[in-house]
Length: 180
Image (tube, rainbow, N blue to C red; front, side):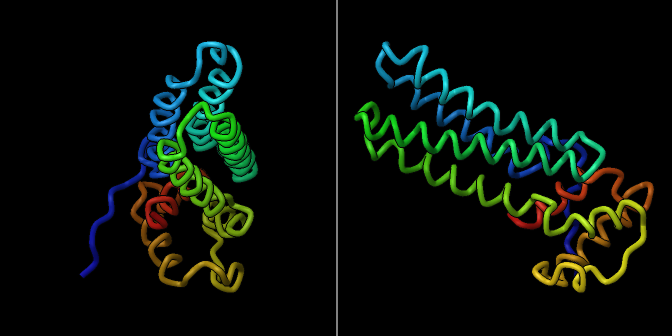
């Protein structure tokens, strides 16, 4: 029996966006413990980099081409790497204890992996063909994608009102849901 999966209608439904928002909360809490002289330095950079991650995911999911979406996901991943570096600086300068950084580093790694898996560089052809309803066997195009995932995405697309994903963001949202 096939379980019903919730439909993805917005960036807020993306698991990667939700985890990126959790990362923002975590970084803001860590940033509060930085010394006052870092208010306009490290604290500002850390919070801005953290906010950039879900903001780029949201903006990218609203784009209509997979190329645009991939670019915003790349920007989000770049911000994640910037954030990891800034957190490492805070740790090396003894501004924050290692015990408090561990969960943030773990979430940074998780979000980074999710962003990498969403980037349409491997699945770009599948996404573009799904958008045009011209679907050859996706497993031949991208052998790394399990056949069961392709079947699930094809069924999810067929449930859409248009019978296909309207944007690359919608398909990526479905991928995000099933990869989490």
